[in-house]
Length: 178
Image (cartoon, rainbow, N blue to C red; front, side, top):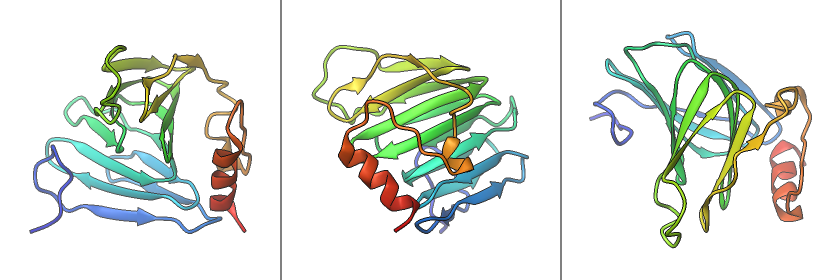
C-alpha cells in the first residue's frame, strides 16, 4: 500500500529533495507553488479531501492556491500549519521552526514537542506581516513583525539573520554551499 502522511486518507506520497546549494520549484496540480531551499526534504500528498505536506529538513516557501473544499496542511516535528490561500515561509531548524506570513493567514498548532512547557497557547494564528518561532524546549515565541521584502529572501540568494546563534547561522550556510 502507498505510504501516507498521518491524518490523511490513503494517497500516494511524493518525496522532493534538494541538494546543498540548490533550490527546486514545484507546481502542484491545484496550482499551488512550493519552492524548496537547499538541503531540504518535503513529502507531499494530494487526496480527494485535502492537501498535506511534511517538511522534514530545510526551508520551503509556499504559495498556496485557495480551495475551500481541500484544506492545506504542513507538518513538522514541532508544529502543524493549517493554511488558507496564502504565501508563507517555513524554516525548520534542529530545535524548532520559524514561520513568516506574506499574504493570507496561517494557523500554527504546537504538536506537543515542547511537552515540558505548561503555560502558553497551543496554537496561534498569523496574518500577513507576522512571524512566530516554535521551539522544542519552550513552545511558541512572541509573534513578531516580518519584513515582507525579506520573506523568503533565500530564494533570491540572500540570507538574513537577526539575533541568531552562530551555530544556527553556520548550519544554514552549510546547506547553501561549501
